[in-house]
Image 1 (tube, rainbow, N blue to C red):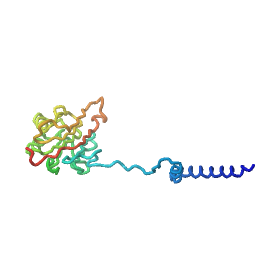
Image 2: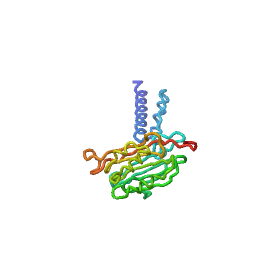
Image 3: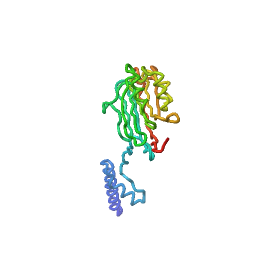
Image 4: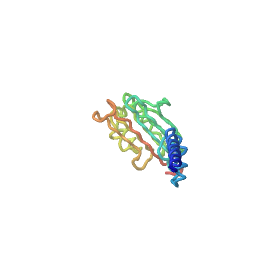
Length: 230
């Protein structure tokens, strides 16, 4: 009978303590839980939320090494959403900049300092392919050439244009056809084929859209050209 009083007190204390912990958990405060963990010798419980993943230039998941340009290119989606060309966190071509169009969207960039030289679109459905050839012929050694397709990149494509793009480093240009999705980064005077190229063929059995494949996206780090390069 003498133990009834202390037992009753212990029960009340336990009830109050459990109520306090549950209330903290439900309210999201958990103010009492870390202290109890400390008293019991357990590890500290952190309530700090992890920060958002860091964003690098052009939205890359990792930063580029020194003396490299970060880039991301996205082709157009069907004939509705225009392409995007980003270099060093600068949007060179996009619908927002109002400088993209049906066909091939081409940005010429200084390979030494990454500055935009000129950006232009070429209609490859009912345009004149000679305009594309005239645009590419005079570029200087080391000039970077970034290309994104939109709608149809190939109806007006001829052998001269394919040969010129192959000389800039394209491996897939011989296969680029009607309404394909294609993105490419090359350079004037490149010695080998470019590693920066993606092509998705127009195929009615696998197209994401009714008459077009899905948009294709490419990102990476382009080595910066040095002034003493040949």
